[in-house]
Length: 214
Image (cartoon, rainbow, N blue to C red):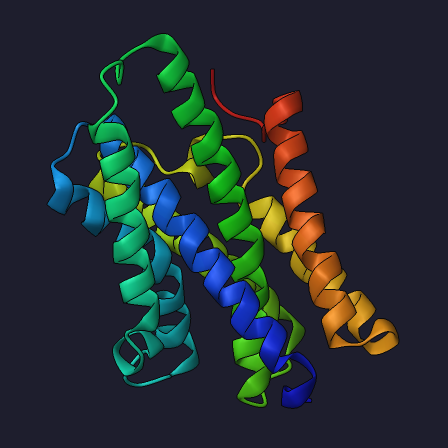
């Protein structure tokens, strides 16, 4: 089974790492942090979810300490984001801020979709196939880094206030589990990715929210 999805898993892991590093770095720039702060936010966003996942699954030491590739990728893209905005003279203009918000949502959603997949496939590669566990680790891998990012940046985490966030991970995880026995791992991973991506972006566009105290 591992051979069926290993290459796809690496692909989604890299895509998710890049996307989350960008979203973390953008938030750091919005908060007017220095380059170190931007890099730290990029790193924790990209690596935090996987770190929590590995703790839950008993992977010791966590993968982020076994392989530095993702940390290097996160650092590089965080620096690129910082340099992009650092050299823009109209950084505080309304158009730039709108671009930052929209691109942060898009990159965050891509990371969310990618890491939902890698969370589940990491558990499957360890021989763990309990459905509740797979849904949980898929979701926590998706939202974990963003939660840590938002706490460090002094904002309420997306999962508690923004349009349906963790719900997209849960839905994508369920779709993956329902389709993998019929369509195979690779096709189910692609379907899961687009399920999370489309549902999350629709939630943003349509302003879908869970009930809240107003």
